[in-house]
Length: 309
Image: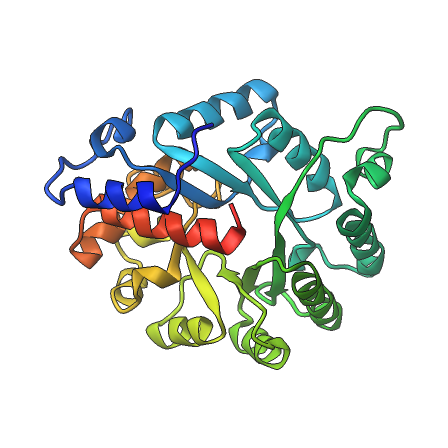
């Protein structure tokens, strides 16, 4: 997979013009129009049921100019399929590891111990535990983030205490392994910010995944040292996210799909894919009044620096 450095990004930024033709609804070849390179900082394509579907989805993304896709871990069951997907596409597919807040139950400490063993000793040391089958060689995976982790009080708060404990422990991982946090925060913004403020020692960094808050919330997240993960919601007609993004400098934004969820307009309600990242980039460029190439260059640079790609 072709990679690119800051000099190439600057060249791309300077040579692309703002009046390039808009991406047609067919979304067949945006890379040919923009010659842009994008990063999807949050996707779950590993969860597709067959290898053929994963491969096809990956290929469509690459054809659309999305050169890197970060797979968001959520629990024990996600570890093995993510590892296999990364092994199938080295250099273009990366992984995070963490326990999603809605997967925090009474046994959360057991789950965290397994993940911590992986971080400490490598995936091979616990491979049978995540595959439920002895034998076989574990893929070699370099984790680029701790996530998805955080707090989710949307449905209920039965496991609030456990969620907070799991969140703090995984924040410690981020600090210990110098990895960014990928935050899932739902109906718990104040609680999460309080914890992050207490834990922030100048080393914590990361992204508020699927950010959809107000300008004030965006500024608070940025002040805490975090980026905003902007996805398909930005393109929704009745969403207020555009008003927030208009007030946020591009240097604080990374792009994501959260595929297969939250597909952008005009594909809302259909399965999302990484190939739609340029659509989100186009909407962001419209809001900012700049070229799509500029959005691609800046958000790509942000993602590469944040995740150490």
